[in-house]
Each structure stands twice: as C-alpha cells, then as structure tokens.
Length: 158
Image (tube, one colour):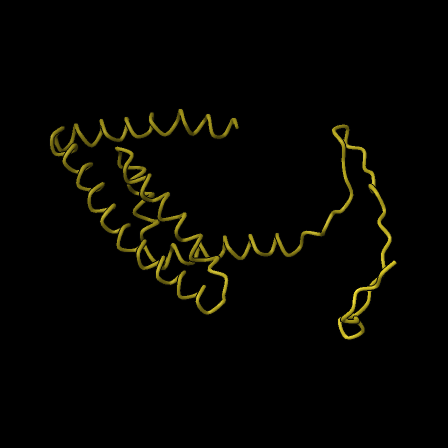
C-alpha cells in the first residue's frame, strides 16, 4: 500500500520534471506535439498487437491448450496502453518497452510460468480457520467408494 502511494506521488513529479526539461530544450509546443504523437502511435501499435495476441489465444483454446502466456501478454499490452496515455516521456518509454514483442513475450512467459508453478505447488487445505486463526477439521463425512466398473445400473432401496 505504501509502495503504491509512493508511486502515485513520484510518477507525476518525475514526469513533470522531464517534461519541463525537454520543453526548455525543444520548445513547449514541440513537447506537447511529441506527447500526443507518442500516444497516437503507441495506441495504434497496441491495437494491432492486441488483435494478434487475441488470435493466438483463441487458436490455443481451440487446440485445448491454456493460453497463459497470451493472457499475460494481453495484460502487459493493456498496461502499455495506460502508460502511453499518461502524458509524459518516462511512462511512454515504459509503454514502448512493453511494445517490443520479444521482450514482452519473454516477460509474459516468465510471469505465466511463475504463476503456474506457484499454483501447482499449492497444497489443498481442507481445514477451516476461524477469525482467530484456530484450525478445525469440520464435519467428518463417512462414505463408501466403488470403482465405476463395479457400479450397478439399478438403484438400491432402503
């Protein structure tokens, strides 16, 4: 929470500092035009790459595979779009880095593999914890198990 608040304060300060420095070197109108140009070009590239990522995800789902890396790429493209819409050169640079396809794919692959690894290593935790953190096993339900091959087609009456 504190990290998010720090980012919320630091990002505009850094962006304003860079915009003032660039504006003093190349002029204010040129700086404003450059900010708009990066937003327009970036959003055009995001749209094209987003359609391609969506197509690949649908193709994987048709084959019965999990499109985990494509989903991560989609989130990264959405984040890149937000970065490109925020006026400033620092966030534009971050958004532009996410538009580089090989870089985005390698990061998305690492993120999706890390996510899958964490999910696979999780153990089922069937016990219940109350508000105080006390663990209890809950009700025990006894039952019988019969393999599918041994089941009868008729219903037993009691």
